[in-house]
Image (tube, rainbow, N blue to C red; front, side, top):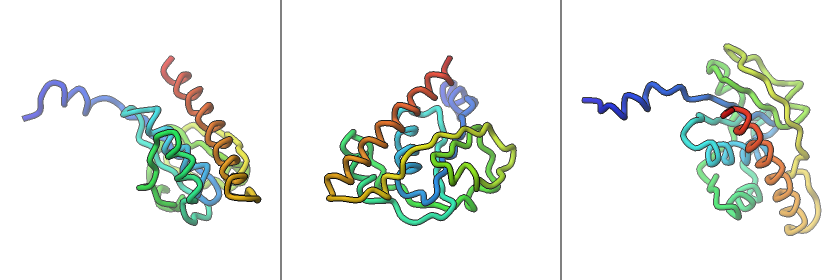
Length: 151
């Protein structure tokens, strides 16, 4: 038997968002982790790439520094989500914005463009600094997005 509170929770509309990037290795992975953490239980969050690869180790590390564990996330292809409907499809790079496939229902398309931290060169510490900066930029955008959605 379902309790009153379980019925309310089941009947609440959960917004669905898909973060897209070229490789689904850094920006979209960090965005997925940030939205899950900051959006709490109100969002079903996915991420994918046009050309998926792997989750970059420095993305794990940058997120771990702010208390968000993305170690369970994997790099996924946009093909995995072509039959799903999303309320929002958010691209995180210009390439993904141009090459974004069509999804059922199309959802609202939003384009955010961030530097690719996976392309950073230098020492580990110099590259990690780029991951941190991009992480913080994405975090600010996710917070802004969530504020606009709650008003």
